[in-house]
Image (cartoon, rainbow, N blue to C red; front, side, top):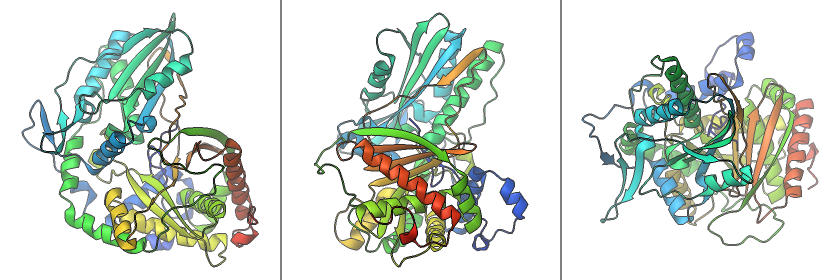
Length: 498
């Protein structure tokens, strides 16, 4: 499945676009802005917002710990803690398992592949981390020594997709680890399926890209008998976790912003469902994937001096609002959480969740709505560091009631996961379907050269596939109509009679 990344980007989050509006304090030539990829523009906008915030200089925020032991432990990052809690209390839901799967054709050097895996796991402490609940109730992250790791080799038999799903959905023991399970399926002579399941507690979409790139780099160097050209790691994930735990003042300031911004937020989205909502710990999921032209979204972004992500968020919020009969719509979106450049080559779960709130009241035009969405998004970027749980707690404190703050999700990425480029082999990405989800409705959008690929993941206990296809049709039609005339009011756009 598509792995998400950022209020634009989904490598768990991250299509990162620069907003060329003058309010961004950027005076760049229009021709230059048009030539820059949407992903780079969004990244520029996020980092610009980060520099404006009170979080200090991104280049010097995190310091490496000294005197690491061969086996050691420390506190969890907020993201690790959140995923540990969710996984523990949701009966080890496979919604937190991320599959990476490639079909390989050609002569594969299995010892070199295993050596590459060992090298990568030795480089990154997070890949050797497990999570232990101590006798006094303290939860700690334990980093084990590098050990011998190898792909489990199995012979192909029966239904391959069913086997891959079984591998993906098998539960992890967070206390014993490892959080990464590599399997190599021998399909025939010179044909394999490489499958790795990684727990979300140690990874995100960006990290998946790093893992794939490093495996390929070390494998290719190994078969050539040369040293791999890998980026220097000046930090490890535990440095990031330690830094986060020390940011109490900054987090408190940002939480106060969110407390005010989310004043009066609805207790839930309230989408109309095909079946009654039931209390359940794990959420069954299905998905449907469609493609449509990205030209309307790109044209709208240029015409309104916003970004593709902002355009898609506005359209998504309109569709959700109509199906929930609400004018106050909340959508969650991931952000990379890597403002410090030294974290970019690392693996680990850095992503954070941002809350995007859209006010559909007052009969705005689509252009006017986009102006509001842009303002909210930039302020969200400025206050992106505080862990989502503190944001949710602040919202609950403000309203005095417990709410389901996020029931809809939007993640935009500017490309599919990178290919596993192994020398002498043809690599093909394999899609593995899992039957679990975290939200009522999730839009995973991949920006291709001329199209947008939209994977809609949904709670199949609530919705029929036909309902989700209706969502998609309205979403696409709305974008086309708004691109033709951004000054049309929302009630004049397709689907308004719902």
